Image 1 (cartoon, helix red, strand yellow):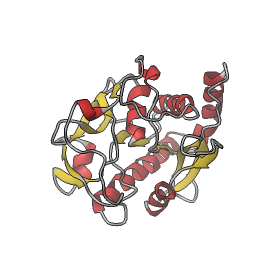
Image 2 (spheres, one colour):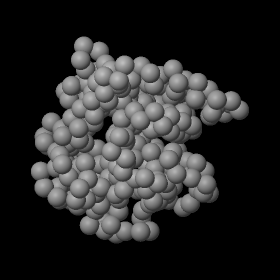
Image 3 (cartoon, helix red, strand yellow):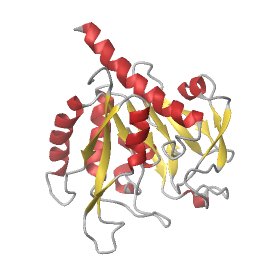
Image 4 (tube, helix red, strand yellow):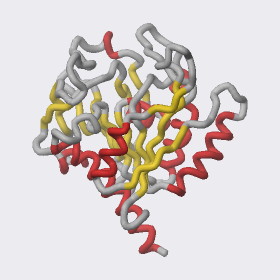
Length: 260
């Protein structure tokens, strides 16, 4: 914590997939860091520097994560490409989107290590899917065969698409204005099975998981399928999602200081 504000690590990627010339460019939307800053945190960026092609990729991921994690009071896992299905023990299926080998190993590793350290984690879109896979859950590779509802909206990213139904007693229920709220939607994958010791905290009308959270009250780990950073300025619930996360990160640091 710096100047009374928690430091949140935003994990971002070197990506070639979105570059037609196949040059590696570093990219993450500034909307994540702006939302964190306006919620009372100090954001820092954590790059995925582990090359997938090296045999020692996992060892390097663990080494780098062990260096980065002590610098932060919480971790935000941002949106992006699909996580490769091999990490949940499956072969690629028809409908799988682009995957990014520069991201998967490092982000799965830092998610596992942060969770084991009880460091607050917020996963957004790809982030919720990555948390699920990292901790033993499962993800639909493509939801098109499971629903006819449109989950990738054809409107502005700051617009709203569909309602979610929030689970009574969940952390989300405490910060939501009511038990059903509108959110935006930009995904073709979704969590199929929550990891052990997690529960579903929001679903859509067609039954897809829109949010999950840790059942352990000592661990703040929440994933949402929508993009609250896109609606941060226009929607009180989106701001509450970020504020709840930032407050959890700040409280964790204060608790550790009291133990010393």
